[in-house]
Image 1 (cartoon, rainbow, N blue to C red):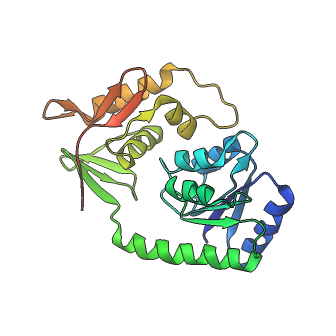
Image 2 (cartoon, rainbow, N blue to C red):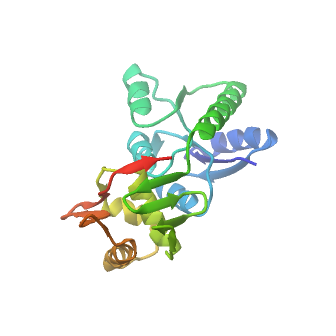
Length: 231
């Protein structure tokens, strides 16, 4: 069963869409803010996201860009913002589809199903195993191998690697790593926690031709520092 996350602060609309999708056989989760959505992303396997632009704690266009740093599945924007520039911004920021309100509930269902068909075809082409330096990374099994020997990593450490690998070459802010991995339910996380996990990762991954796999960009964040080869 596919799981769909609806990020929408209009409770009535949210429930209407949830009822439609549930009756069509989908599992549906409701979030009404950026912070609650990040919690759902962390603790659930989300197959598709329906995102509103006008959220109480963020701009949906900017949030779409943020989601794309760790989420590869379809995003459908559902919003009253119907100007051409709004649509262009949404699609440029990573949305796969853009539906303006008011909308036909049946057409929304058809668009959701179309995204799943397209995503299934793409998944058949995509590999879940990649290579970087002396490492082999299997995203399905959540395992990393160094010269064919498995590296024992904590779940959080693999999460960090996955975000950096899937954004290969891009600098990921420290704040985004905190929010993507730890910042749920208003938990307080020590600033040094990220440093400790990065240090452990570097020790486990070793180096490649004298370079660290994870590069620190001073006062900003981190990025994956070794080229990636896809199978």
